[in-house]
Amino acid sequence: MSYPLLETINDPQDLRKLPVAQLNELAAELRRFIIDIVATKEGHLGASLGVVELTLALHYAFNTPEDQLIWDVGHQAYGHKILTGRRDNFDTNRQLGGLSGFPKREESVYDAFGTGHSSTSISAALGMAIAAKIQGNTQRQHIAVIGDASIASGMAFEALNHAGDCDANLLVILNDNAIGIDPSVGALKNYLTNVKTGSQRQENIFEALNFKYFGPVDGHDIDKLLEIIKTLKKIKGPKFLHVITTKGKGLKQAEKEQVVYHAPGKFDAVTGELNPKSTTPQPPKYQDVFGLTLVELAKKNKKIVGITPAMPTGSSLKYMMQEFPERAFDVGIAEQHAVTLCAGIAAAGGVVFCAIYSTFLQRAYDQLIHDVALQKLPVIFCVDRAGLVGADGATHHGVFDLAYLRCIPNLIIFAPRNEESLRNIMFTAQLGLEQPVAIRYPRGRGTTINWKTPFQKIGIGKAEKLTEGDNIALLVTGTMTETALQLADTFKNEVAVYYFGFVKPLDLAALQEIFSTYTNVITLEDGVASGGFGSAVAEEATRQNYKGKLQVLGIPDTFIEQGTTEELRASVGLDFESLKAHVAHCLTLI
Ligand SMILES: Cc1ncc(C[n+]2csc(CCOP(=O)(O)OP(=O)(O)O)c2C)c(N)n1
Ligand SMILES: CC(=O)[C@@H](O)[C@H](O)COP(=O)(O)O
Ligand SMILES: [Mg+2]
Image (tube, rainbow, N blue to C red):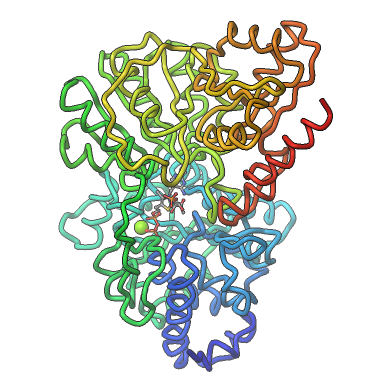
């Protein structure tokens, strides 16, 4: 494919030299470029296609990078990256050693603020605007582009509340396409629909918060956008521009199936059709083991309720939402609310499952401690995307959970080793625990094709010895148990594998036996090595005055960037080959 006009744009200075009349042609090429790359390299698609015209208009009208442009979440910033000097290496997007799939300050001066988690843009832009004012810079513009799902989050509202009471030079652009990953939810969504259709006369929320409100404007009409931005630039203080766009704009299937084409995987760049799925039977995704098992349990246990903050498709809570719409809810991008809502449901006797990604649970840490654990409310957290998640990279890896959960009193922490163990802990939890439990499992598929095994109750806090071995005790948690078993198979009778599903409470009796039997102990986990499972074992080793050698293997103390999970595991020595070499070396020292 050739992109004659786009190829002349190496940064926004080049863009600003074009006559306005050529911008629509450039928009068509930019859209085509994004489609061509994402079709083969994968990534987020619909969001970037929807803001092609807005991206061009912003870089054309504002003086970036002096003016600060912040993309909320940042999954819609592909056009921005391509126009700001990253066109020629955009095919490395989300790959090992390549561009990040999100804006990143160290990647470009045009990336004013790193994003990945949603609803941070208004706070960050306001912070920059306040700093500029203090430094005497009254000319710099600060622009936050935020989606309709992201603006409904508490954090965004906190920032709007503050900004409306400041005279800082801030422009909030609401990119309203009426959908997040899944359809947007809530009263704000209804309000925005009314504003767009003019179906009800009501006070403008944003004006009520002291913003100068403009719009709604067609976000695919570059001329209109430029005209309105010209006016906005002359106004000081907080301003709000409401832009209406279509997610997936320009690719028929992406416009029609917006949920699927949020991040569609590989597809045909010309027809837009998704690449055919493999017809050979495959093990299930962990998210589906969770989602379908929950439906099974909810059919029998009428007290079960399911909650997810904005990830019904990603977490597969959608299955319960379809089957029991009155007992399963998507509450939008509202992790803090979701956790305290679950606390409330549990306090009132509900058996509540909170389906949340590990990386997003970080946002609700105080709610987890203050509202759930302190009151010993038996909320069942199903913490998805634990461990390395792959192409989303540093903002999204679920590697901190074991460390940040382990220090919370009253909380049980369980990491299933396979599909069966995930089903059984879910079954056990809904039978009734006296305290909360966090069940963490990874992105992607398990290992068992026939995974719908009969339910069995799990004894809380029990570790299991899986293989016999004389020289090394390999203590493992979660789905890395499969790798540990491969190691035991490679070093037959040398490596004893102990599976610790429970990171808390730890099986102290099992540890006592291990410390009194082995002079070499290795722990293995797919979370950070400092503070996680291995640290728990090390603390107990100190308490028990263990004199042998203990090694804690996990993610090192650094942020891990993007790549395939296999590449990333290899990069931190947690793949089978690296571990095999490590164990072989340890055995030579014994
Ligand atoms: C705190 C947080 N929760 C959840 C997500 C997952 N997530 C990424 S994009 C997205 C939807 C965003 O929707 P919207 O703001 O409307 O932007 P659009 O994709 O429509 O452009 C969600 C829920 C996230 N990135 N951050
Ligand atoms: C941008 C964002 O936060 C989500 O789109 C995320 O990439 C989803 O991750 P999964 O693909 O693991 O559901
Ligand atoms: Mg949206």
